[in-house]
Image (cartoon, rainbow, N blue to C red):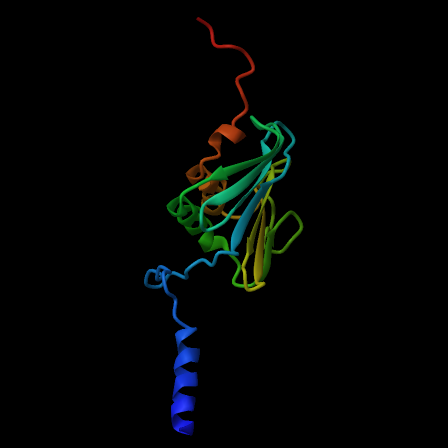
Length: 174
């Protein structure tokens, strides 16, 4: 009788470990958890660089906050596809710190000697449902050209282009 109760209890505990209805991760690629998110935030430059923050989750739900030199200011919600989220995350993945933060800012060892001043910066923050977090700060006068290009282009896979691009200053001529 004791053995039967123990076996039933063990089976019930193991049944709680199944992932009914969840997709499996592709080989070698971790599966995002519902509470995960990526926040991508630009900073001002000497000129009219767009200043905004975008936060997106694996299900594609996201928020855009236009601050300066964007087509819209304030908070806007948007919906991307999970595939767009994966493409955005994949573009940033090579530069994601294993843990903690990496600072490519003027005066930091990772920057070395900055190539240009008065450039904008970008902060990328990965937040995990488990409580883990990573942070990348990149001043566009630091880092490699490939790194700068990849991080600058990453938001292009998200459906936020109309929020970022400022409206034309003059009506088109007829």
